[in-house]
Image (cartoon, rainbow, N blue to C red; front, side):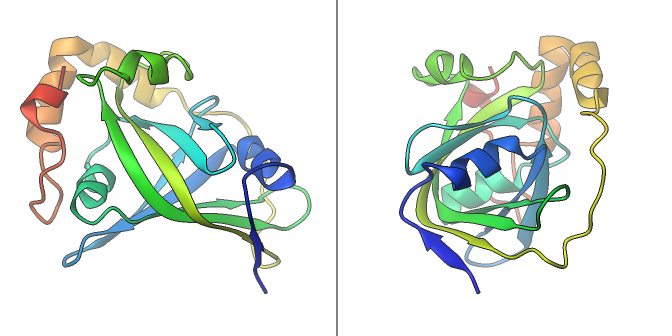
Length: 184
């Protein structure tokens, strides 16, 4: 049975920030539902009692950005793969902050510099809950992977802009994601 929380303060926010990975789920009105794993040291911050921000790194698609812009519904989920069992979820809405927006520099300063950073998603919680997680397997966390950072550094700024244009301009369903002015 899930327990709802009034805010991200206290143990729920602490649990969220300690997890090395989380999952993001979004959907537009029609088309595919998307679930993406996210992670990396320092790429998620609890901003206040109702808001979380995470650094959106270059990926093979841009479903989350497109879905948020089309429907603006998002769910984040964390699982305890170590220690006592627990699952936390934040259901809400999100704002996409891209490199061309005035608040980019202030928001980007909250995160480590990552060569593939293409956006920051600021999630406002409508519902915060936890549940038992007793069926989540126990696993040992080794370390963050560095392949994406190495790949993005190797592409360079121009190569990343080209990649975003070819692979991240629209979602799999053809919804707009990163516009040309956002691929700065």
